[in-house]
Length: 199
Image (tube, rainbow, N blue to C red):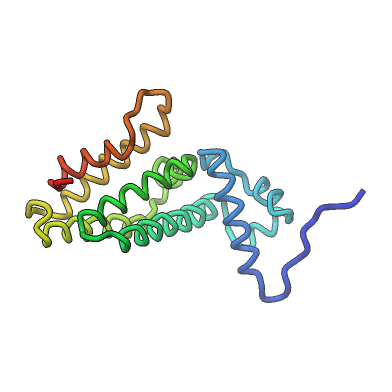
């Protein structure tokens, strides 16, 4: 009986294995939608390595989940940045950023759920998520500076907006059978009511 054990990386390529482990963990978390259901042994099987090899890179499950969530968050921020860069003005850029986030959550509901509702989040926090907050504050401030939104405290407006958007996305993931209106319509209402944009 032949064994499907992966071939080891060449010397000095341990970082490649670490990336494979994180990729496998993220894929599994998207399917499980629950960080507590992830096991390091299952991840090791997915990558076709011994469980001890995972421990060389991550001391425990929480560390692996945090690494996977950091990568997902960077991807989410990056796609938002790209969408905003294509927009013709600050209001369109803010809208594009939010709609990109909504699209990512729709494509990766399990990851979005873990990113915002995981036990790891409650135990250890995810300080890297402050980048998304800062991007939203800057985007709201740009709208105000351009005269496209009423002047005010951009940080407070941004937090209100993020609360509404994250709540909307979480509700859609957790209660998919409700008669949800199109996400774009809800996002536009948030931008009008909370930011004061005229769309």
